Length: 364
Image (cartoon, rainbow, N blue to C red; front, side, top):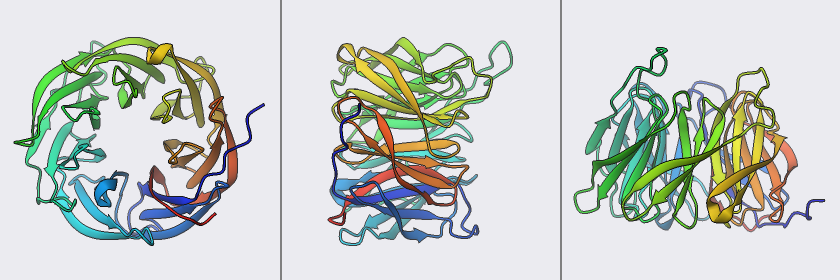
């Protein structure tokens, strides 16, 4: 039997969307949740395709990508009292269809990955947090290659995330089955190609997270619905694929499935991944000090096409953005077993694609 859920203080979420601003009720959302997992729409900014967000909590800043052919990055101030988002600055992202962005641990730079043309770009921030330029200071276009069967011929940069120490940047390329590692120079704010790791054909690497030990990286593969454990050498910046685990309880099921998001609990004991097609959230145990992963269970996501998930601070709640059913769902998380149970009713939002905690609230 799962343990009784531990109640957590309420808070706020930023929820991105793939819908245009003209769609009724669409935009960049802020959502309030309480300790029971109940969800309440807070505010919405009617902007186009704000599909992914990243926070700089030390300076109270939220950055969002505008996923369009001429991509943009927008910076907002997070009001500490009301969790309202105040637009501060905008810049060209440097590529087509930006789908992910991340903030350097120092807050000095923002990195954007572009699915449309395989570009990785870098934008410096001002001293108080927002984007400080009108266009990137560096844009790197990944090379493409053709596979023998003609698939995956174009680069598709899908995620760019700094290493925990900020010395390197890892960028997944779904189109070429490769992880690119760049060295980051904090003085110049520029990236230099460092290493890369080639995965077997057809994996489609999408998102990744680091283990708290900084010795392993967990890579989620969209096209094969697998989770790859990679070894990571923080000193040399060397990454190497080691073992692979399925994200589906029945990998032979005939329906198409595309893995989307991966999150790690704060204690490093459990991984959570989403399956679009199966419409499920997979619960994985992290074993052997981080060196291996075991699929424990899958639970319905509470909607259709679970694009993103996030854990609240402390990890007692997990939130899921179900893009095609236009719903945000919440789950209680058992800290001992990792098990998820539905919490409250789904909240109706237009095409939610990302979810990120951005502040706490005393309301319960």
